[in-house]
Length: 465
Ligand code: ADP
Ligand code: MG
Image 1 (cartoon, rainbow, N blue to C red):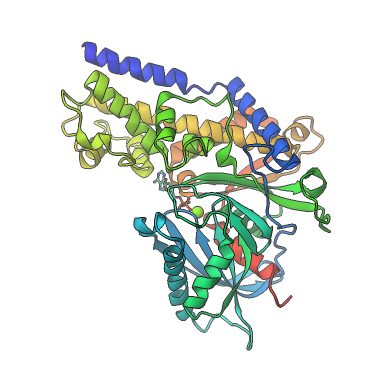
Image 2: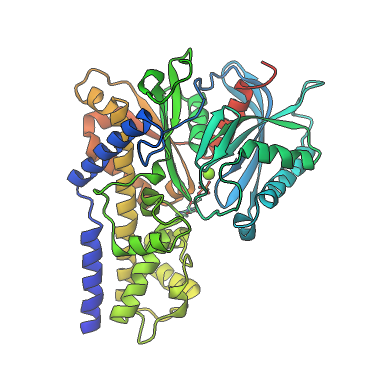
């Protein structure tokens, strides 16, 4: 019928606009490298902030003692404690708790959010068992993973540049987030000091390095997306401080804010961006990360409902609700292997109130998921190539001069659970690097390595050292 033809036309157009042929991905990778250089050259030199983390040494394995970590940056936050045994990189004991953040606190006031977090932290500290040992007379120390763009002023202080990922809290931008947390900790009568402020990428890098010496970069693919890597301190013109002894500095790229004319952007992405909490920002993140993939699919399906009556004569009202289709549900539909696409049918019914869909329609929905997920995965691979290029690994590996193993520590629910996404990313990276170079580059899933990483950095920046 004409309606079906129209739906197919929308699909074809989407496919064309989202296309990421290898040549385009190379342009994206090159643009990433160029922006990295510009961001390192001067403050505000690029959309890529290339933030200096003040981490000039990664964990060695010699860290000892009891340390806490707090991870804030998505829909959940986690509190964690570890007892580090030193030599040989031993984590003697580790415990964590996960608490979801009430949505109203994500758009409320700063003190309410920090009070909620500090209260959960105090409760967790109160449950500390005998296996954990704090030497007499010492204060507990904490590594704070705060996964929003922060301008660090030292390893343990920094001001918030902007909120992302659905957070929008008044009065925190420009404030020192460690001071905010410290005040809230004091309001709980908890005796604890924040000795390291890091981003989840930095935490993942530190945690990854603790277990594997070849880790030189970290990538997050979760609610949002970001990357961090080890840079030569001399290659950071905007750094005017003393050169660190190690000669190295970890850079938090904030690559979610990357944008380039080479990115394949559709009308759906433009509308999503315009209606978002942060229009014009985090464009790369809006193409790639878990917060947005399902929402892009919803927008495509809505267009198909409106212009091709895909789901019947009237438009299913729920299809008009922003963020109703979450990426885990998109992923479940995409991975449906049943012959009648039963999961797709159930999800459409349960989430969008669309019942009795035909197999043909379900297949079309899967096609939309496939286009959106693979575009995101391939662009993420291009981003990784950009980082490897900046570090000189791709060429070095290709001309055979340096076939040293390189590991990218990866974390995030999107990468961990969305198998089609992660396999597509890996295949694409291999395609971009070529088989030979790809053989020396490993992506290693470091689930929640950032918690341990933050605790390790709290240890290496302890007030008692
Ligand atoms: P955060 O990024 O908030 O720290 P995670 O790393 O745990 O948290 O990632 C959570 C995100 O991962 C979710 O917002 C969601 O987008 C994505 N995600 C979680 N489970 C799945 C899944 N089964 N399939 C696809 N994406 C998922
Ligand atoms: Mg996380």
